[in-house]
Amino acid sequence: MIWREKRILLIVLGVLLLANTLFFFTYRVQYVSRLRDLDTRKEQAQAGLQQARRARITAEQQLASYKKVQDDLQVLYNERWATQTQRLTTLIDEVKKLSAASHMEPPSYTFTSSGTKTTSTNVKGSVGTTTVGITYTVQGTYEQIRRLINLLELSDQFVIIDGINLVSNGTAADKTLTLNIRLKTLFRDTRGIAPTANRQM
Image (cartoon, rainbow, N blue to C red; front, side, top):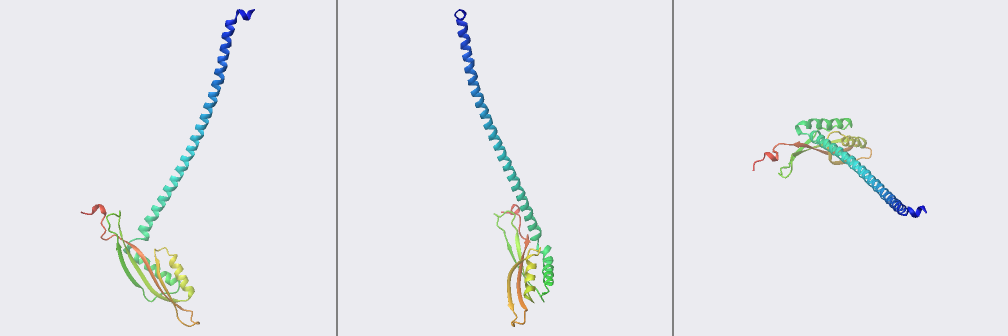
């Protein structure tokens, strides 16, 4: 028969077919495994990209917040804590204006001044401050006093209500109250403070 005559050829063909079949299935399994590995690596890369984007957004927000704080500090230092020469007259005018707006103008004002200087060589950019206190006495109704205190608290000037003493004038019919109020503010004082780099040992 023909298969007996071609037996060797058929055996070779069968072996080749079996080898091709094994190679096909082995290659397919490896190909599927590679595809899965690539998908896993792709997902990991996308997750890393998203994390990097979130980190960048967070860093940008922190940088913007830092710049805003820096700008606010510059405004506080250069405007709110300006030197006494630059801001004292404006502050006195503001206190007088708020007292007039409350219809409680005092007959006189008392001023006190005290300076504190930071001169430590360990403090970079050390400056001193001068504290100026303003004390005065006014008389008026409770509503007027509340209005004055509210106006002082809402003032654009850097002014602190340091103390309040409220005294009733006696009778129930007399609704006039006497208010002793003590205000204070800080001024930047750079006199006598040499930069650290310029100090001689």
